[in-house]
Image (cartoon, rainbow, N blue to C red):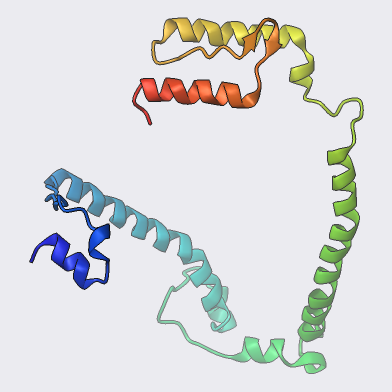
Length: 196
C-alpha cells in the first residue's frame, strides 16, 4: 500500500497529500541503539536511586519500633504494624500526648491564610516596584559606562578572533536602531548563514 493511500484511509483529503510524497527508510547504527539503551538504563537506575529515600520513609510508617531503630535496617522482609497510624489518628487519646489531628488541622488552616496574606501584601508592592522609577532601580552594570566599554571591547575582540562570531551594528549616526530593525538584521544574517 502506498503512503498516499494510507493517508487517504486515515481521512486526509486527497488535495492535502503531495503526489511526490515518499517514505524514506532511516538506518540506525548499532552504536546509536546501544547509546539509547545505556541512557535509559542509567535513567532507570538513577530513578530507583532517587526514589529509595521515599520508599524508606514510607516503610518506616509500617515498621515496629525495634525495626526502625535497628543498626542493620531492612528494605523488605520486616515485621509490619499499623500502631503508628493508630497513634496518629487517635486524637486526644494519643499515648504520646500529641494530638496529631489538631496539628494537621492547624496546618491546613494557617498555610492557606499565610499564602493569601503574602499575596495580598506582596502583589501591590511588586506592582509598584515594577511601575515606578526610582534611584537605584536600573542595573548597576548598565549605569557604569566604564564597565560597558570594557564589555564592548571584549565582544569586539571575540568577534575578530572567532569567525563564527558575527558583529551586528545596532547604532547608526550615534543613535540606537529600533528593535525591529536590529531583529531584521539578525534574521538576514541567519538566512545568509543558512541557519534558518
